[in-house]
Length: 232
Image 1 (cartoon, one colour):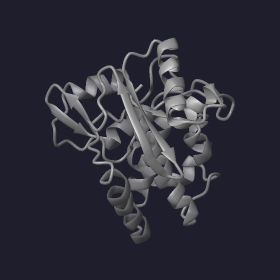
Image 2: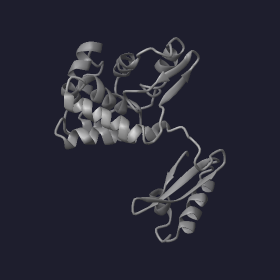
Image 3: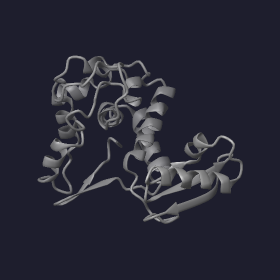
């Protein structure tokens, strides 16, 4: 684990009161789960009060965000919902109409009816029975040939929606990267023509990614693949 929230620790010991007790619960959980490397940040009334790390991690050192970056996409999409640009019930057929016209319709007829809420909560029907639709075989093959400056977002969306869903939308929770890729596509590809959305995208970059000093990259045999649109 790269990070562990104080709330996770408290879930294992609701009676923990002090910083030392919270950290002790976290260290115990790390040991029982055989986690060799990780860190914890403890907040109190919104303020950072303690940090600790074990294994390869060091307090204050840069870490790979990995799927923690989904929170960035989630908060930015929530900002669009607060502004009335879309809603939790907006289906993909509406949200990604321009994308589907550009890259093609999804192979699975159920996907266009999936609402934003199910993408956010990993209940859209994507699964990993045959590997993650977004980040498994297709991505590996793509990274063998992509250049560091290539714009590959449409290609990634296209191969993602070419996969059939594993379950009916809404039927079950199944963690995957695909829902957040499509949420990222909405923020960028679909809303680029709206001034308000462009301002919101700038806000996300300035107040979230920049403040976190985050550079979202995948290393490839030919350089770096920049994850700009969909933070997954």
